[in-house]
Length: 354
Image (tube, rainbow, N blue to C red; front, side):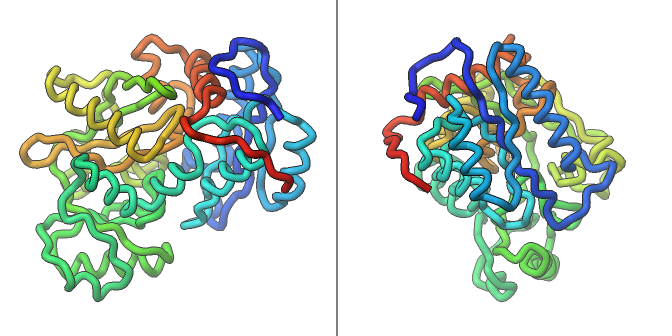
């Protein structure tokens, strides 16, 4: 099995892995989160990695896990570039995939299995952050049945979402609620349609920031990006819903923009950066992540979530923030590989025959 080194600029054999399963919901042409868009991004990443001198094998994984394991073992890559992302609600296979690759003895980019699983359980990760003194939204609670609404004292407005999803899945125009009746309705909607508990938090009215963090032992905060909801009509809540992220034909997508670098006063920028690094380390993230932060009524930053293995699409999101720091896309991918070869601290490699 390949041995880890601190840094590598030599030519490597990179296995670029993605989830080839199309899920249970058919793709639509206007959905930027579609399988076609994913495959294009994977091809573009492979092209860039090859331009760095690496040998790249694109390795899709769908339903035949044993065949995938045989292929990966035959390839014996120097590193697995992990772009595996769940497409079925509540599947939580991302952490299982990362664990399997490490059990096979291969270095893998991005966060380890523990971090991936922890951050997908939003209530668990929020509880961890809160316990470490990292500020999160008030009224954070996980509701497993509609009747649980009556067990809490609430301060409205609240935001309701599935507790184990990502990429804006389950967030829509009805996700902000102003009354117990609306809260019950939305909790019931999450339980029925996503088959998982609902996460409820106080909706914060302040500015929203996407904070990209890149690196291993010495993570760096990239220039801050601010989500601009200023052009949304008043009837649409200012949240990063699924439509705002992915549906090109929606009002949310067209009227939501990102300002990068954000215009932030130095002291607030320092607070946001400090909180982001603390959250990144708290969940044991590695290599790269995005920390989403929103300001409360007093203008204080609070962590919404840590998104391990955030999107690496060229020119947007994390890659855009890196570009503002003078880190071009090929260099960013190489930094992520370097972090994988460096490896998370205390990660003992004990390959097993699977």
